[in-house]
Length: 127
Image (cartoon, rainbow, N blue to C red; front, side, top):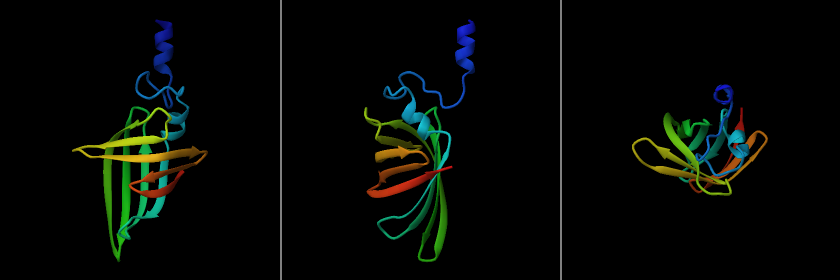
């Protein structure tokens, strides 16, 4: 019972067995519980300030502040995420109401996350 209580009390970016490919939690620990922000322009010329948060339970939130020829708007989304391959360089985002987006060629180094997102290479900074 003491061992169960101790394990239940451990917090942080806990990885539950079977939720992610085996990496001892290292890649997931680097990814989760911080806000990532990336600034980029998509294929149609829309400028995007993209903020995204990954939680260790496989959920996440993102906001996009978009600007296109003087018009600005914000978009907010909730999603479920998972590592999409065994080498932990692809993340699948499943959105409420359907739709899946992949972050491919994911590389995390210190406070930077780079990836190919919808055909655009994006670098996010972690806060």
